[in-house]
Image 1 (cartoon, rainbow, N blue to C red):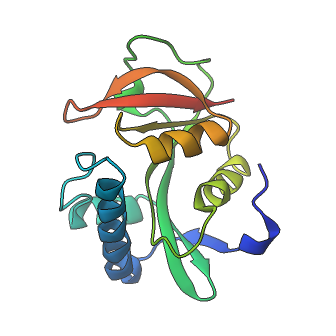
Image 2: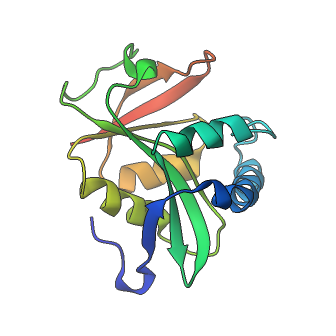
Image 3: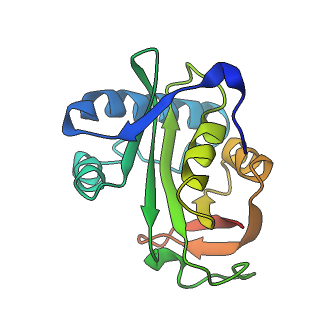
Length: 168
């Protein structure tokens, strides 16, 4: 998956200094999700400062930079995700080692962020999993457009249902 040439950007690991901008981006993303029919996926405080710090210290958090401005963020974590151990009403495409994309959020300033994230992820991993809320139609469309297959339903650590997808 190649992003359009007009949206070339830099992707790098997130640092602690990026946290204030990430908090702004997540606030923008929560408002966008609520405005597009998905008000319940992320609570007003999600992700917490502690979660952001854990993602950064674990080396899983990334930022997308265009013209010296952070325009998006995401988590790309390799290895088994415990929330994916049980899948209902379907099955994973295979049991290959995989990476998971979580907490992807954009400031809305640049289009094509998901394509950029997928391009980056596919440079490092061949099998990728992702999940989203049933009401998050915008993300479901982006996921399917990127070539993922719907696999079934998983439950997050807090028990919330999510639609699960796999690329490969």
